Structures are given as structure tokens and as C-alpha cells.
Length: 76
Image 1 (tube, rainbow, N blue to C red):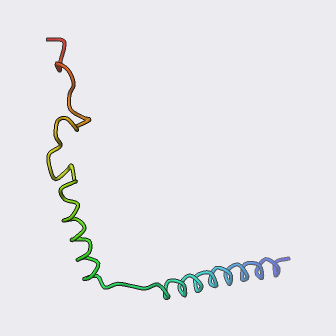
Image 2: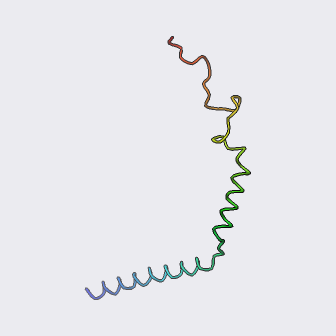
Image 3: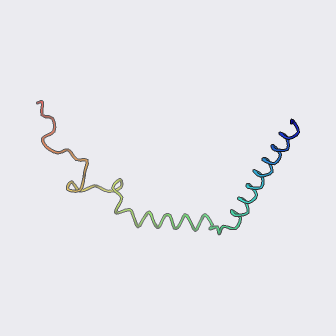
């Protein structure tokens, strides 16, 4: 029975290695871009969306869902 367990373990290891090799083959077929091209695209995208970013610009009070409504503190 001990021999059967080691065979099963070897089969499991073989299957795991087979999956890893298959995954590496799939990844090898992917088209890749150079970092310089991707960084230029990302920079351009950020510049185009800059006007819409609420963290970089001010939010108009009419559109601000977080502004205080009412008088503020009512205890004073």
C-alpha cells in the first residue's frame, strides 16, 4: 500500500508540472508591448482624463455629495 501512495503522489506532481508548462506555453504566445510604449499610452490617458478627476480639481458645490447641508452644529 505504501508503494501505491508514492505513485499517486508522483502522478499528482506530474500533473502539476504539466499544468505549469501548459500555462507557460499560453503566456509565451501573448503579444507583448514595450514599457516605453505602454508608459506613453498611460501618460496620455491620464492627461486626457485629468479634467474629470475630482481629486485633482475642485468639485462644484452643486455636485458635491459630501458637502455639509444645513446650518452645521445645532447645539450652539
